[in-house]
Image 1 (cartoon, rainbow, N blue to C red):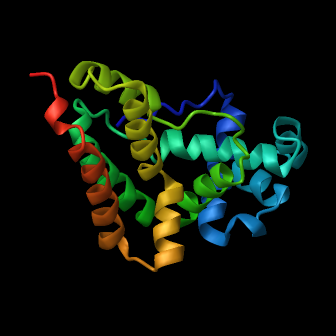
Image 2 (image 1 turned 30 degrees about the vertical axis):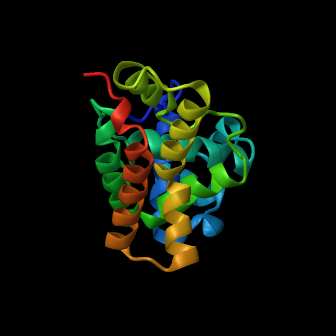
Length: 191
């Protein structure tokens, strides 16, 4: 699945701030990063960070969007039935960059990103339109909701924290769950 999370047009300064914050999150964790550290890492004045991101929530939200669009960017799947492999790959990438995955997941779980649709939803809808157009609206919503939920940093965090799963188990479980969702519609595929 392709990440439909797009980074709004950023200035060079904003991109430097977000990249610096992401680097620092990986080094020391998000709670221990001050605007002063971000400014120093980005090579700018601290007031410039405040001017672009007046609150920590603003900085965290912008960084989470930037992380999803640049660090966890995905190749576009060409079939709805390729999604389990894309989910497996995403889970492995989250495991490679756990601090960043936590930031993305926690901003989504706290509702910091407001009513933003889940990434990839439009792509899933297009794939279903082409491959399984006979789904009724309720089935369609259920498939999209399940696949969108499975393909998220929040799912990775849940498997890691709640179940203590390791990298391979997380990837296998998420892919297996996506396959189970898709098994219910395989007989409806348009040839």
